[in-house]
Amino acid sequence: MEELLNAIIQLIEKEKEGEKKLSIPPKGVRALIEAVRLAEIIKPSQYAKREAFKKHQIDEYYLNRMLTMLFYDIMKKQGLIDRAIEDIVGVNPLILDPWLRAALRVVIDVSLFHPSKPSTLKALKWKGSDFISSKTHPYVGMYYWDIFDKVISYKPRPKSRDEFLEWKYTAPIWFIKRIKRLLGEETEQFFQAVNSKHNWTSIRVNTLKATVEEVVETLRSEGKEVKVNERVPTIVKIKGPYDFDRSKLFREGTILVQEEASAVASLILDPKPGMTVVDLAAAPGGKTSHIAELMKNKGKIYAFDIDEFRIKRMREILKRMGINIVKIIKKNGRKAPKILGKEIADRVLLDAPCTSSGTIGKNPELRWRLREVKIQEMAELQKDLLKAAAQLLKPGGRLLYATCSLFPEENEENIEWFLEIHDNFRLIPLNDPYDESPLLKGTMRAYPHRHNTIGFFYALLEKVE
Ligand SMILES: C[S@@+](CC[C@H](N)C(=O)[O-])C[C@H]1O[C@@H](n2cnc3c(N)ncnc32)[C@H](O)[C@@H]1O
Image (cartoon, helix red, strand yellow):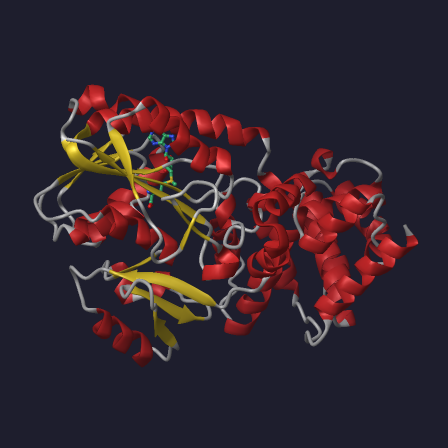
């Protein structure tokens, strides 16, 4: 165990190398604790961060950048941090007061993983204690104060090789084992890619409103470093954080946030103006809006989803983007053939609800929230939606099945199952712009470490006439 302990300490020291000493002012302490607290309630975590930073007026660029870095670091390491808290306080941190838990998560991250100035630790101890007292009860603040010195001198104590691997790759062991089965020798590169700090924000240009050149010019005039994506020419990457709330381009629907691998899905579907398209799991509308754009806003799109909040966002996005061919239907996608009738669609997109395991680089807390049992649950729902999609398609029509999951049960295995019971469908082979899946010929996967985007799966199916 001594050996594993030293290996972990070396990993941590290596991560700290070259990092400037953190200097966090009192309002930064409060904002960070509140963001971590809210991240338990508000998903995705970036919304929690935005709300807390706004409340505590984190307007200064460098402070915002530093606190953002810390916030995502805490999200990414949450499982490890919670184990540390359990070692220190002797109980599962999930039963602690949520404000105390949030404050301890912040202190562990700052003291264990980052070099910091003495003033930062002092602010964490004093202001942290005051802040959680004000949010809960003075006794909670006193308890935090009492254990603070023990917390900042904590050293990890791995109890097994599996635990060591969790520290090494910053992920739960079941997830690591699955990635090893999937990627073998590429496991190391995969975790390097999803754990590295992402400096570029990916957006898609709405060509109904402007050309890519016009958007690039505007962004450059705002002082931004930008590059146009090589695989999808309407995807543009912006260096560093981008303040969407203050962006005219965003407010007017000229750009929206989208990853390259997501945009590839709509391109593969290849919808044409005048077609009838069904998007079976549409909100918040990233792909629906792209499909409408490719259809030049002519034809009809039926967009199903069941999530009220996401549908509200979809309505706002479509309105901003000037799209008016989408009929939003707040119903279960399984019921779509009953609602719309059979064989009515030229194209069906099933961007299926999934574990989202391919997005752990972008949604760092997800790896600790995900449960392995969820995979099978998702696969069952995906199969039901695939059956509905098959009924909706006209003969000669095309269905794109896509997920942002890495797990074969949600991907290749579903398509194998589908083809076994639907002999009137054939796979249209895909191998561009990403790689053919080694698990099922004709299907395609995007990988974070190979393609510098989120993990994605695609299967294009045609209904034989
Ligand atoms: C991967 S997300 C879709 C993302 C969307 N296509 C986009 O590009 O913005 C999956 C969506 O499926 C929705 N969903 C889950 N179960 C559903 C069901 N039974 N019927 C329809 N939608 C469902 C979720 O609310 C979620 O919005």
